[in-house]
Structures are given as C-alpha cells and as structure tokens.
Image 1 (cartoon, rainbow over the protein chains, first blue to last red):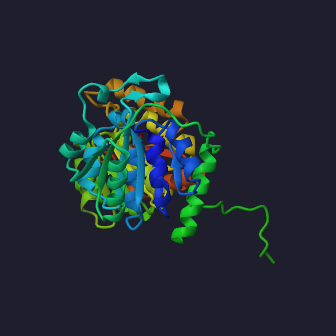
Image 2 (cartoon, rainbow over the protein chains, first blue to last red):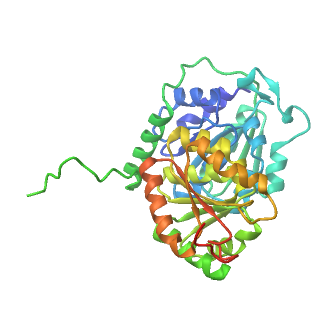
Image 3 (cartoon, each protein chain N blue to C red):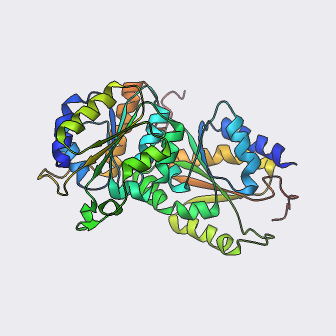
Length: 205
Length: 173
C-alpha cells in the first residue's frame, strides 16, 4: 500500500474538513489531490499532531484531519497522551507509517524495529484505533472515522516512496494567510488584526 | 503579596488581554498560577507532556481565532526552541510565552539555565520583559499581547519569584 493511493482514495470524501500535513512529500501529494485553503502544511517535524489538536480544541464543530508520519509522531509521542486526555471528538489522527525517515534518504525509524504506534495510541487512552494494512482497510477506517463524532487514530502501514506530483507552490506566509482568511470567511471570525495607524484620517474635518 | 493573590492578579491580566487558551507544564514556583488557570472557567487549559507540543497547540488554535499563552519553566523554553523557530517565527504566529526564570539572581539552583535564558531569547529575536512587580503584571500582559499581535511574533514575559509572590519584591532590580 502506498501513501498516495490512500490519499487518493479518501480525497473525494473531503468537504470543508481542515487538514494539517506533516513535513515531507505528503504535503505535495495532498495539495495535488485536494488544493484547498483549508490545508495547512507544516514545515516542522513532530508537531503535526499538536497543531491538529489546537485546531480541534479551538473549532470543536469542525472536523480536523492530521496526515502525520511515523518519524514525526515518534518525536512527539507525548502528544498522544495530551490528545487522549483532551479527547477532541472532531479529530482524526492519521499516521502514514513507512518505517523510515523518507525525506532523509530512508534511514529506518523505530517502527522498523519493535515500536507499534497503534499500541502506543491505545496505551495513551485512544479508544478508536485502527491499523490498516490494505487500501480497503484504510478506506473503511477513514469512512468510519469521518462519520463518527469521536476521536480516531488510524495507523496506515505504507511502503516508502513518494508520488510523482508537482511540488506544492505555496510558501509558509502564503499558506498561513490563505488558511486564516478562509477560516475568517467560513466561520465569520475576525482573526488577523490590522494596523490602526494610517498616514491620514479620511474622516478628519 | 501571597502566591495565591499573585496568581489571581496574573490570571486577571491574561483575561483582560483576551487570552482564552493556555498551555502549561508545572514548576513548583508556578503551582498557584497553574491552579488559578485550571480553575478559571473562561480559559481553556491544556496541560502538556512536553512544552514543545504546546507551541504547536497554540499555533493551531491561533489560526482559528484563539488568543493563547504558554506557561513553562525556562528549561521548557529551551525544549521549545525548534517549535518556536519552525512554527511561530517561520509562519509569523504570535504567542505570549510566560517563562519562569529559574536561576534568577538570588536563586540557589539552575544558575546555568538562568544565564542562558535571556541570550537565547535575544538570539531568537524574541522581545522579552522581566516581570518584577505583581501590580504591573496586568498592564504588562496587555501590552505584550498587543506587541505580539502587531509583530506577529512570540513575546516573552519572564516570571520571577517576586512577581509570583514567592519572595519580597525588590524595586531597584
């Protein structure tokens, strides 16, 4: 099973869900499949799960999907305990486990050895934990998670390798502004403060 | 001023500044403050396992409209540096950092942490203020939040034992 095939299988199911992608090729694959202002592409290894928790807690009526990786989650295992304790019912935490640091020439991660991230999630207190080894299992797990009103952890065991897609042409600032403006518009919120000072006051007499 | 009174004053300042989500990791000197955060019904409190994850949580919450603060010891600030750089500074995301100043003048422990705290903040380009007077806290928090939002960067407030009501204030410091 390839990560890109998993993403392609579930992309048509997405509506206004917000997505956080991990550092690495997943951002390019997802942006190619679902170019949407509700995608936030992190340039950090480790914080995908935490970023998704922040979104989920702050917007409890909106579904949040995290596309995390094994190397990233191994760097921030404590986030699983924090997420399970907060128990946001609108969060789907998906980990594409390719058992390596793919963007760093494929050195093995701990999941290539003994570590099982699904068991860690269960131990931290996640109640809905799915391990998917086939595309059908992944699709079924995602379908259930999307339909439910509860926290889900889906571990997708995938082969290493990235799809041949164009690079997501989106820099950090651009990504942030597009995302926040989309939230402001879709949630009717005012988030970014604008400067109050101006060279002249048009209302001045 | 007692540590409980100081905690009430600081939490009052947070609320006046519009802060409604606070992530924390304990230090013995922060005990009363963290309890006051936990007990406040207007603040969503997220206790952490490691400070760095709190930076990610706050960044996410900010993007969808929350006003956030992170409370930690300076050791936790050191733990958070990659997150501050690659999440806050990279994307220009504001955040109030409340950093307990372990190893401050007069402390018998953590002098190495104390000596590195301000230089690391300076190296990151994070503007910071050392809080000494509890009565100044609400105004300082309000101004720091305005600065963070305007600059779209983190701003740090260093919590000393004086401001936390754990020893007598020294006005001349």
